[in-house]
Image 1: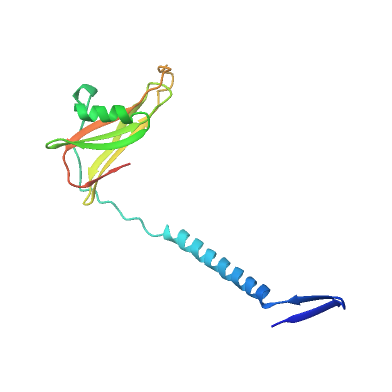
Image 2: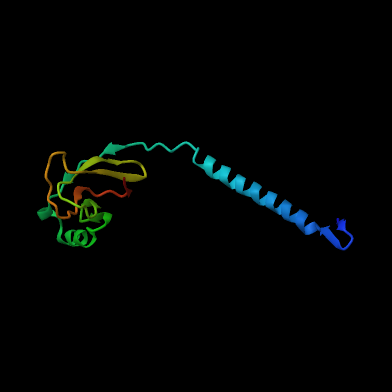
Length: 159
């Protein structure tokens, strides 16, 4: 549909279909974006699946001199950045969480949880900073923890 508009006999303005269809396209795009946004927001509204803990796992925190040589070499290679690895021997499994380079010494790591579910083994650790009032070394440190437990078949989830 063409509408001619005469403002001056010498100047003619025409409004064509393309301008109308451009407006319609913009409305469609806006509606699609709104739908995508609402889908993304509501996608996070689904109830989270509960993890049913089957059992807590027994573990030992391994001192540096008891860490298998090959594992220690890997830790040395990765220690400057945060890393999470597992290492298996015959019937044992080592879980390692390194927190990368820290500005000072005085850090410690605690195991918050180590447990088994039907689908995975969960390993949760926490880095604790130097205690208040302590005077840590001013040189960088590379805190990590190595835990030894019985070998499991499940996937490992580091938290």
